[in-house]
Amino acid sequence: MNASDLARVIESVGKDRGIKREIIISALEQAVLSAAQKKYGMNAILEACLAEGARLAQPGEFTLRAFLNGRIDLVQAEAVMDQVQART
Image (cartoon, rainbow, N blue to C red; front, top):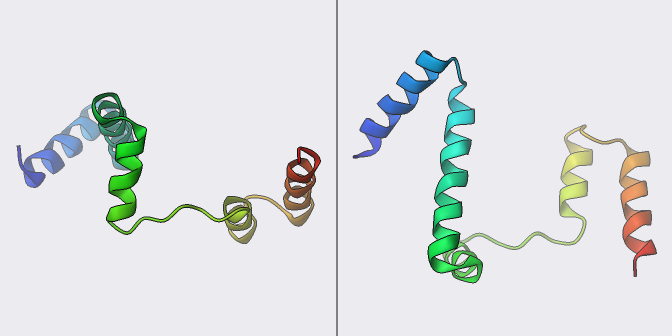
């Protein structure tokens, strides 16, 4: 199966089942990651991702992104910081 075959399958399943394309792709990504983790282990996957240019998140990066994207407000971001600091 090549990329165009996969794209047609995704499109077909989406139309037949009424599922958004993004949801199908996300489910496929999760399935592939799970299979790779079972076969190779998480460390090997992490090393491969880093070798391809991925990087580890910086402390607070996800909270900052959530704040900048309007998913949480400043009070919520500060509450996350308080929780993290309370555990150390």
